[in-house]
Image (tube, rainbow, N blue to C red; front, side, top):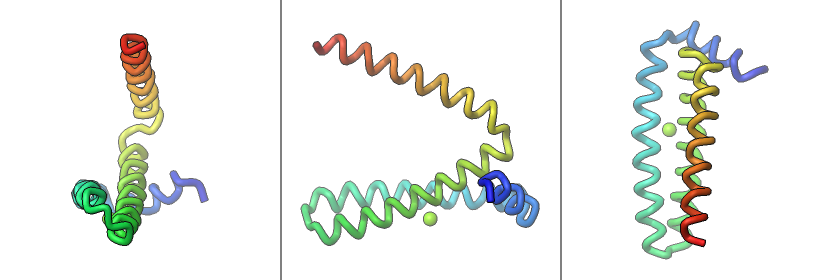
Length: 102
Ligand SMILES: [Mg+2]
């Protein structure tokens, strides 16, 4: 099944408001996971770091799904166009920085 088909089914089944709420909640979970991973990295404890990494990966996947859902809802093509523009702009900034440092 294509990703868009999942998003259509989820939107048709649960509605826009639930999609907004899920995105907000998952973004909060990702923020927490990033903070926790950074905190565990500082401990140097490999077991704790691995556990925090697994949690971080799960939360990134959750938010990636939410971003896919929001993009489906608000115009995939336009969002991809903006995304490409911003990636190109960031690349130019990185190239400029690298030239300045070398
Ligand atoms: Mg989550």
